Image 1 (tube, rainbow, N blue to C red):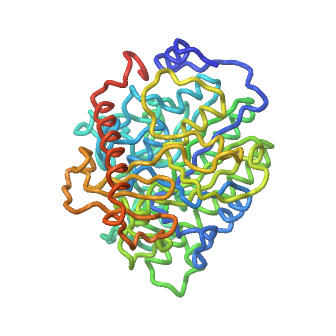
Image 2 (cartoon, rainbow, N blue to C red; image 1 turned 45 degrees about the vertical axis):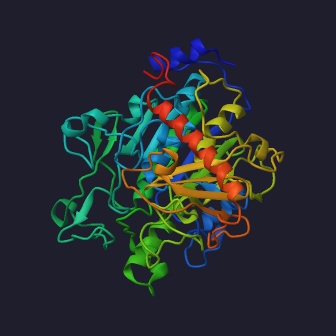
Length: 489
C-alpha cells in the first residue's frame, strides 16, 4: 500500500520508485483499435474479415458481449482509459477538444509509483505534441494551450502521433490523391519524397520528430516500437505498463497488397478497410507471440477494445454487428465495441460474459489488482472488474452514463435510457437535440427497435434522475473541485 504522500511525490517529481517487484505483479497492456465496429471481428461473428489472431486471443480470454467505449468518438474514450473517469469531468467532450489535464490521476503515474516502466505507442489524441511547428489538427503555436504530450503526462517512453494517419506509409499521401477515405499505396521501392507529399501528422518521442523506419503498415510500425519497449523492460526485470493505440481502421484506410489480396473481389474501400484490420490483427499476433517467448504472457493483462463504433453510414464497410447506430451515436452501435481481456494467471479458461463493462473500468480494476491506493476520493465513473474476473460478479454494481452529440444515455443491467443532453443538464456537445425519452430493454432488444418509455414511466423517471445527478457531479468535477493542489504536476 502506498501513502498519499508517496503518490504525490511520484506525481510531482515524475520519480520512479525503485523496489523489488512481487512475483505476482502483473504487467498491463492496453490495446485499442480506432473506429472498429462491434461486428468487425471473427470472434464477434464476422465471416468476411480475417482476424485469426484476435480470434485466438478470444479463445483464451474473458470476452465481453457488452463492452463499451466511454464515448462515441475517439479522444474522450482515450482519456477515460487512463483516468477511470468520464470525459465530461475534465473537458474532452469530442475529438480535438480540450486536453488531458495534468491534475487528473492517471494510471501511468500510479503504476510508475509502484515501480513500473510506462510506454505509449500510437495515437495519443489527448493534446498536442509540439508548440513550435504545424502538426496534425492542432499542433503548433496556435494550439499551444493544449500542449499535453505523453512524456509530460507520465510515460517514460513514447512513439506517438497527435491524431490520425494513413494506415500504410503513415507520413505520406500519394501525389494527386485528394480523397480522405482510401487510396492505393505507392510502391515500396518508390521514394516518397518524389511519389508522395506529407500527410501532415508526425510521430513524436520526447519532443523529437521521428522520421526513420516509417514505411509500410502503420500497425507494424507501432508494434515494432512497442515490442522493443517490452523486451527492454523484461531484460531489466521491470514490470511494464504499455499503451498500444492503433490508428486502424480509422480513415484513410490503406493496406498493402499482401492484405488487400484477401478481399480482391470487393470494392476498393472494402479491400483497404478489411485489409488494414487484418494487418492490425497480425500485429496482435506478434504481441502475443513475443509475450510467450519472453515468458511473461502468464502474468500479463492484455486488454483489447475499440474507441467507438464504425465510421460512415450503413453502406460503409465497417460493421456494428446488427446494433443500431454507428460512430457519433450513443445508440449501441456507436459505443458498444469488441472487448477482450487475456490474463492466463487469473483467467484459466475462456468464457464470455453479459455483464457490461466500459473503458472507465480499466483504472479501478488495475488499482484493485495491484492493491494500490488512490490519492484522494474524487469520483470515478468506472468499477473494478476484479470480481467479474474471479467469477464472482453477476451484475454490474453501477450504471454506465454517456453524453455525446446532444444526447445522453444511461445503461444498467437491463435497460437503457436515452434523452437529449440538455434535458439532464449535460454537455454532450454544442449540438442541441429535441425529442422524447427513449427506453430500451437491451437484453431483449439489442437493436434498440422498441421504445418502452411510455410503458414504463417509473423506470424513465428513476433513470433520468440518475443521469441528472451524474451530470451535476461532472459539472462539479469540470470546475476543478476534485483537484488537490499540486496533484499531477
